[in-house]
Length: 106
Image (cartoon, rainbow, N blue to C red; front, side):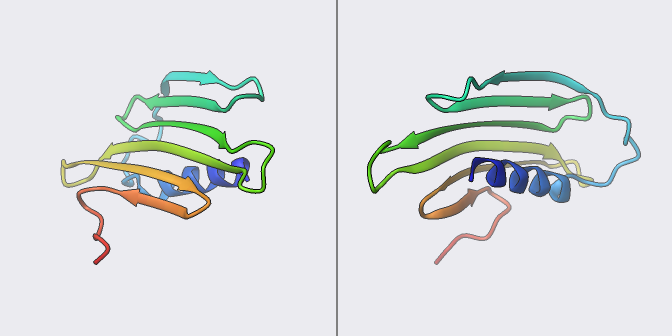
């Protein structure tokens, strides 16, 4: 499940990131804390201003209500010069993104 969420988020970042001529962006920051127990966290920053951070924990371990909860955010500057920021939670209730540029549920 965790791998699927990470893959889905990477795809979301790739789709959301603007197409720019700086395809040679470099990773300038990478931090990871994942020893396989008690959750994980990581953050990545690139030379073209894309940033991503995420952490995950298992809620209610060993019970019927056990679930992975992931919280994170990513940001990038669009072709229009606006900084776009998306914060999200992914848990047993699904993927729940929030951002000023995203439509709000009624």
